[in-house]
Length: 89
Image 1 (cartoon, rainbow, N blue to C red):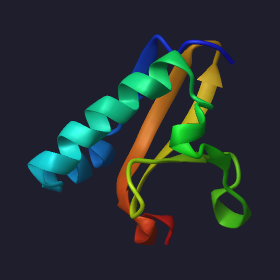
Image 2: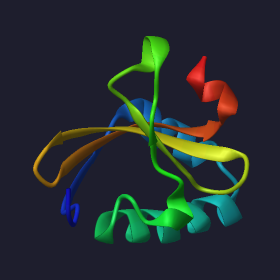
Image 3: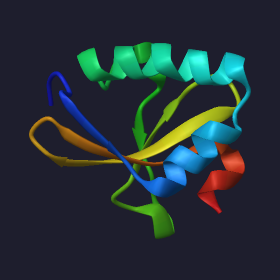
Image 4: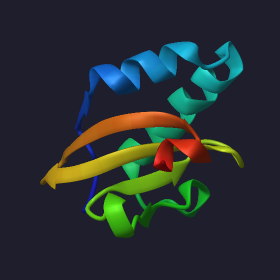
């Protein structure tokens, strides 16, 4: 998987993003730019999820906050949620 050119955002992601602090929204913007260039950049700690979230992936925004997403095909990704670890529940 190379450069990501298309990211779709679910309504749930957009609501969760809007609830973040301004600083976290800005940090996510920076992380998303890194993600679009290389979704496996070591700064993101991108990893597959297991169990009931199998098929989804996650990357780190900061030590506490994560983005849940899915690779669809080629350069297309869907962001499902953003928030602290409890988004895995």
